[in-house]
Image 1 (cartoon, rainbow, N blue to C red):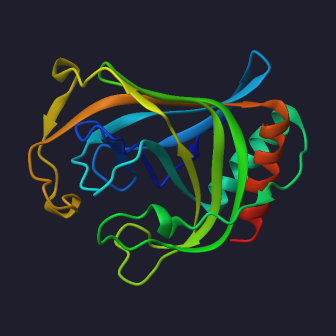
Image 2 (tube, rainbow, N blue to C red):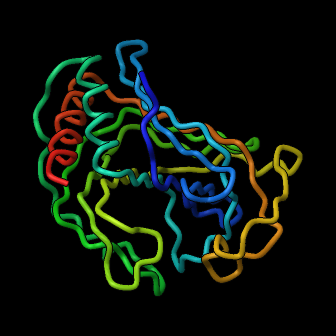
Length: 223
């Protein structure tokens, strides 16, 4: 399947030295996501160069966050549809993102939130593994809030709570880069920035993948 555009992919963790982050407009980064079927599961995959950012959250939680434009969500939904067929738009959820916010950062405005389940999620980067077994995938239609830095238009957000970090960052598998000053967006971030190649996989059972596809198509059509 053709890889689809991601705006931001990040994996903050409760280990403050492990925070992979890629933004599509940053120099040297090109986050894309694609779908394929393997062992009767639909697998979403993203491979890219990731910054290893400082985690300034007051109470960091281990998770993956993916932000994509509406057209990419529509394309990805149709890709999954072609693999496994049609499903149902996922159930609404009442999770309030403000309950999980720590620090002064501004959150986007949430127009609607729904939920499917993933079978397994895993990210490998520089000798470190971030993963979690079966659990929710929160799917939101979002738009920028006043003062929001990274989001410039409506997006689809996938949020996946994870459970653990295994290993530590192997510095031999990283490199240091001097990035433009405009990319140093948070307190404590300075040149040179350490980066490494990482790979994220998210596995869905067939029915959940069908519902994921239906929801992505619905969100993409309403952006």
